[in-house]
Amino acid sequence: MKLYFETVHGIHDKIVNKEIKAAEVAEAVVSRLEETEGKVGAYLDVESEKALNAAKLTDEKIAKGEPIGFLEGIPGAIKDNICTKGVKTTCASKILENFIPPYNATVIDKLTAANYAFLGKANMDEFAMGGSTENSAYKTTHNPWDIERVPGGSSGGSAAAVAAGSAYWALGSDTGGSIRQPASFCGVVGLKPTYGRVSRYGLVAYASSLDQIGPITRDVTDAANILNIIAGHDEMDSTSSKKTVPDFTKSLIKDVKGLKIGCPKEYFADGMDGETEKSVRDAIDALKAMGAEVVDISLPHTKYAISAYYLIAPAEAATNLQRYDGVSYGERVDGEDIVSLMTNTRTAKFGKEVKRRIMIGNYALSAGYYDAYYLKALKVRTLIKQDFEDAFKSVDIIATPTAPTPAFKIGEMADPLQMYLQDIYTVPINLAGVPGISVPCGFTKSNLPIGLQLIGRPLDEETVLRVAYAYEQAHDWKDKRAGGEA
Amino acid sequence: MHVASLSRLRVEESETESYQAELDKIISYMDILTSVDTANTPPTTYALPMENVFRDDVPKESLSRELALSNAPDEEDGYFKVPRVLEES
Image 1 (cartoon, each protein chain N blue to C red):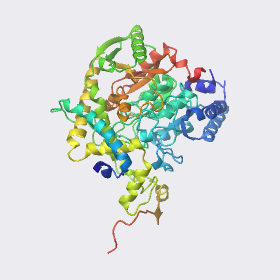
Image 2: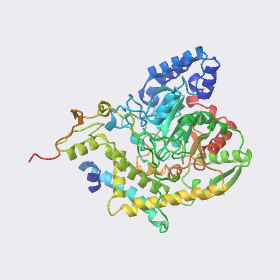
Image 3: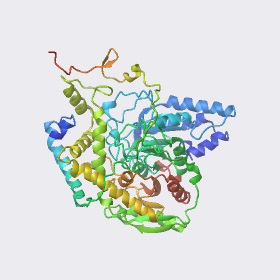
Image 4: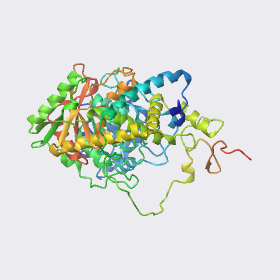
C-alpha cells in the first residue's frame, strides 16, 4: 500500500521499529496533498512546514532511543472550527476571515502534549451548518471517490483529506451527523463520542447542547487511539463528563458473542437507497454470524427527530452567533450607528444557510412561538431520548445505516428541507447524547462507499468500538482506498 | 420581515420571496410536532444529567489586553472602538 494511504497505527509501528523515518511519512502526505488538493479541495489552510518540522523532531527522538506517542510525526488535519492558537480559524465563514485565535481548544492542547504533527485546517460547511460542505464560503470540497460528488458535511474537508491520502487522520465535529455522514460518504471511520466525553472548549459553538468533537480515521484502531488522547473532563467545559476515561484500545477485540444488537424498524424505511439497505442488512447478518444476537426494535419517535433538531439547533445557533457583531473580533462592515454596523456586518459576512438557521432559530424563540416550537421541540427531545433508554434496556448496540443514500452530486440538493431530511439517521443520536460510529460496510455498483452506524449507551464508546472493530476485521472494506489506488 | 431585524440581518427585496418560501416550507414541516402528545413530558435541554458545576474562584493567568484586542476590528487606548452610541447633550 502507498505510504500516504496507511493507517496511523501501521505507520507508528514502522517508525518505532525504524523501518521508516517520520520525515518520509510527512513528505509522502505533503506531496500527496499537493497532487490531490487541486481536485479535492479539502483544506482551507495548509501548514506543511509545521508537519515536516514535527516529523524531524520525532526522528531525533527515535535516534536518541526515546519513546514516542501514538500520533508523533504522523500529520493530521483539524476542522476549521477548532481553535488553533496563532493559526487562522475561519469556520469557513467570511465573518471570521482573518480571525487568529489567541488560545488553543482543549483538544489542541491535548494533541500538542501528545506531540502531534499539524498539517492544516480542513474545509467545512460554514459554522458546521450543512451536510455537503457546499456551504463553505471559500471552496467546494469534492469526494475523492467521485469528484462530481460531495464529501458530505459538515466535516467534509476532514473526511475527504483522510480518504484522498492528504491526511493520515483528522478531527471533525458532529452536531447532527457532521462526523458520521461525511465518514460514510468518503469510506472512512467517523466517531461521535458521547456528549461530554470530549471537551468543547475552543470548538466554535454551533448548537452547544449537541456539539461534540471526534476523530475521522482509516480504521477503528486509529479512532480508539485518538479518542484516548482527546477524551476527558476539562474544567473549561462544565458539560464535560467527570467519568473515568478507559483505555479504548482494550475494546479492540474480535468478539461480539453474546452481545445483543438492535435493529430499529424506523431506520429501514421507505425512501432509502436499495444498495444502502442491502449493504447494511448484510453487515447486520455478518454480526449475527459472528455470534451476536440480532433483535428487532422500535424507536417510535424517530419521525419527529428532524423537526425537533431543526428547531433546537437553529435556536441555539441564533443565540451563539449573536457574538458576531463586528465589535470585538471578526470582520466589520461600518455603519452610521452601532445597530447598522452590526446589521451591515452580519448581512454582508454570513452565508445564506447560516442566515436561514439564525432566522429559524429566532422565530422559534420569539414571543408567541416559543411554546409551540422551541419548548415543544425540547419535549419531543425527551421522548426521543427515552426511545433510546428503553431500547438499551434490552440491547447493547443499535445498528442502522449512517445515511439514507450514498454521496449525492454537487448541486443536487438545492432545496434546504430536502437536505435536512438527509440527516434522519444521525440527528436522533445527538438529541439523545449517545455515542455513534460510522464504519464502511460496502460499496454501490458505481463504487460509492456505504456506512454502517453503530450506536451505544451513554459513555459506552467501548462497546461501540468493540462491535465496529470486530465487524471491520472480518471484512476487507478497510483496505480499499479512493481512486482505485492502494 | 420582523425575524430578520430581530436577527440583525437585512433581507434584500430581491431575496425576500425566496427566503419566505423556504422558511414557510421548513416551518410547515415542523408542524408535525403538534401531533405528538407531550402533556406530561418535561423538556430536555441537555442529554446527560447536569447539575451546577462549582469550583474555587482562584485567579489564574488570563489573556493579556493586547492579545484580547488582537482580533478587534477597531481599537483605541486599549479599548474596543465602536460608533458613538449616545448623542452629546
